[in-house]
Length: 238
Image 1 (tube, rainbow, N blue to C red):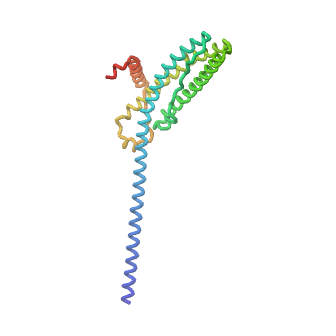
Image 2 (image 1 turned 90 degrees about the vertical axis):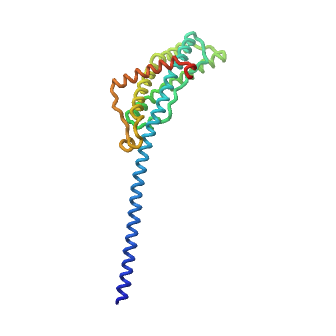
């Protein structure tokens, strides 16, 4: 009997020890899984904040390039329209405006995302008009090269279309570009000193409350920057 109880006690002790080891291993794995999820979540939130800041910089470059291109295309349109009004064909062509695919989806501000998306739609419409205009210019030039007469009304129609671009579409988009650039720069300025870890931990969106006074002040700085750039020369580099 003593042997039976001793044997039973040993088996029971071994089962208890095995059960304790199992639950200990399970608890360790469970907490490691939970902490892993938390670390993954924090890392992704931090990466989202960094992506938002980097996209603001990318957007700044895109918009500044557009402002430069507006000036170039304005000159080309004036020259082309003048030739068309004289019933002359021209080899001039208008360049389209590039904007990175889905750049607005990389932003961490819903308000700014919606504004950039609307801007993209307007740029797409402008590009469509530019492509259509270039096609017509090519057709007129082909007729001239092939020695076929071009009906004067075609020159008049295309010149009026280009004048509309010059006096309506371009000024509106130029102003829109400046205001979008102002908003982007205020966003960028307010986040430049923020910690990616803390901002990523506390927020998933980075909206900014921007007053009209702040926007006007930044707009004035932008106008001064554009004016200085227009006066710059290679001698200013060093």
